[in-house]
Image: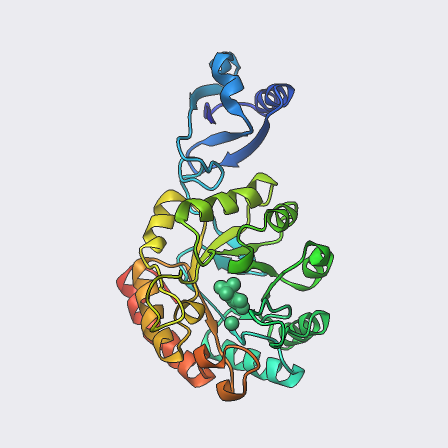
Length: 337
Ligand code: PEP
Ligand code: MN
């Protein structure tokens, strides 16, 4: 349910409304839009059916949100959410390029890749320190040391960093060392992890599960937001289909669909979506044309020796060319790269 406030509603009136909701056992989230301030009511709001909410001073109208997700919905917030990550704005006019190795490997390599990503026009450095591998015998990542290497690369380049969390017990570490916490496809419905990252305001990039519907995806984002964290971005990274020619099938229709249903930024990961380096550029171009707010791309200086996902990683020179190409497409759809 949404409570739309009168433009002239005063602070004491707003506080009174929120107190009243609390008395009824409901949580409220206030959102100051360009035109209106609204209060999103969270919890079992059937209790409100018999409450004369419009009798409260400051209330203009009360609307039911029909979608099963509330805080992530466009009904709740008309304007796009723009997330500020160390000065990089995600969800605004500029399409944000996040790039780096699948897994953090050596310090020198991490710094080299970060410098190349920056020089090419990237603004966020990616790198997995904790890797969710299908086989227990594959490289599992450097853990804490990997996060330190990312921090070192950040110091040298100024690029904020994104890295994937696997375990709720690592939350303090990620709050300290990462600028964006990534929740991977395999953990999209790890509800304890979602609730944990929801308890802070650290930006979170939530990846779509490999077999998740749009509804399940948005409900997972709702888990995070319902705990208070508003800095959530959605990432389409391909879904499993009958097609075996590539690793996953990039669901491009998800981009405009998510933008229509939600105010959250939508990022596309063409690397995991295809599993093939030669498909990364065409799918990136398509993602920008479809309205993506950012791209998450695997870049490695020497893909054939990469410890993880070398087959889908592009070299820094290719990344540079891609950024240049994307400028034209972005312009055609009223955006910038
Ligand atoms: C990743 O980005 O490193 C990753 C493991 O991706 P996904 O969760 O989409 O498979
Ligand atoms: Mn990878």
